Amino acid sequence: MSANAVSLAYLVAAVAFILALKGLSSPPSARNGNMIGAIGALIAVIVVLISGNLSHVWMIYVAMLIGVVPGVWAARRVKMTAIPQLVALFNGVGGGAAAVVALAEFLKSGHTDPVGSLVATVFSILIGSVSFAGSAVTFAKLQELMTTRPVVLPGGKYVSALVAVATLAAAIAVLPTGNTALVVALLALSLVLGVLFVLPVGGADVPIVISLLNAFTGLTVAASGYLLNNTLLIVAGTLVGASGTILTRLMAQAMGRSVVSILFGAFTAKASTAGGPSEARPVRSAGPEDIAILLAYAHKVIIVPGYGLAVAQAQHTVRELADLLASRGVTVEYAIHPVAGRMPGHMNVLLAEANVPYEQLKEMDEVNGEFASTDVAVVIGANDVVNPAARTDPSAPIYGMPILNVDQATNIVFMKRSMRPGFAGIENELLYDPKTTLLFGDAKDSLTKVVGAIKNM
Image 1 (cartoon, one colour):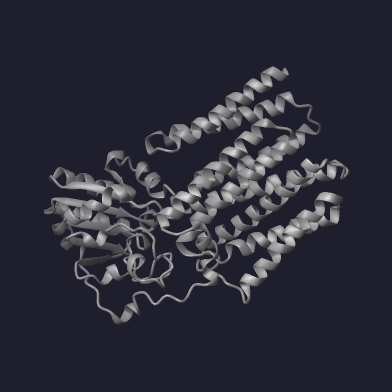
Image 2 (cartoon, one colour):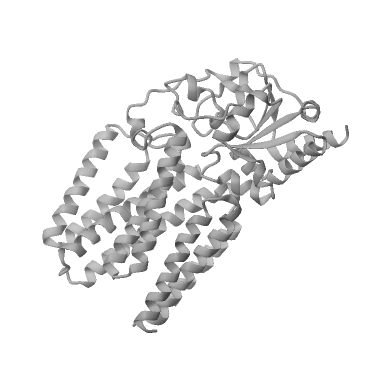
């Protein structure tokens, strides 16, 4: 291919990436946006393979095959509940790959890179390694291979500060010397820093860190593009870095906290006593038939989906319940909190899979004023996003987070497997509200029984 043809193809791919981001900003266009982005990436890969003077090209094809097979298998087999973990893994691999590319370019150059290239190399290795190691920890937390609560080592803030200073010192020392030993030390320190960066983050804050690490990966890719003199990598990496940064900021706002407090708040946090011991406090529970009567004779019902809905794969059943209620003249809406589930848009994707009409999905700011005029609010597996402790308990890790005003509804139905606390690890006072009725059990099974009871009425 001629240089002009390559440039034109890269321009088409870059435009596709921009259109993909635009499409992903809205549920109705998200599927098309994702497809446009995939086409842009395919164009970029094909152009590189047919236009470059590549040696050992067979090794590239073997590597692609090795990556494609498990990648397709994982993407098709992964459950909706595990999508956040998959995103964390893919993001980490991207950051690690960019760091490896920078290291390979450094070794290939014979340590004779100009200062600008050395800066890009240092940046890619440092940030890419932090993203790789940090993403591995977020995966372990979300997969519950380790505790989801903040992990604060003895003297943790001092250890983290010391490692951060040592990492920065190694990065600075590499620039005038190009010393290989210093580069290896920088790589090792950056990996340790990535682990220490994420360990103190817990509970509902983990998705925000995933978004931040995604921004890190994007910036690393952009720096790698500079090293490789590849304009498309610079454009794509910058887009990912910018969009990830914006998303991180929006998510932090949705939590009602700053990014700094999310990342380092565990070093100064005090133990929460929210809710007290649940076993010593009575709750009101009912069977599916009682819940069916309450819903069937309501005028307005708002459904609040959460992670428990995803775990039970109950999205189709909740759609059936909503359609059944609508056929009886009940107004049904869905209240979507910005950080419901384990990642942004988790609930939107879940409900879209069940073909829930987009117009029924109401964002928090839009729906919060409607709870006061709602007959029944049905909370399915959500916990932290409806927990009044966010308003009332300064010691709670979610304090200050805007929540859905479920407690203002006339009646509240809470579907839970047990009295275990939510992802943030604190009790929910809403469970003990006199207006709340609990329906214990698997969400799909409970919803199926409620649907059957309404049909028999």
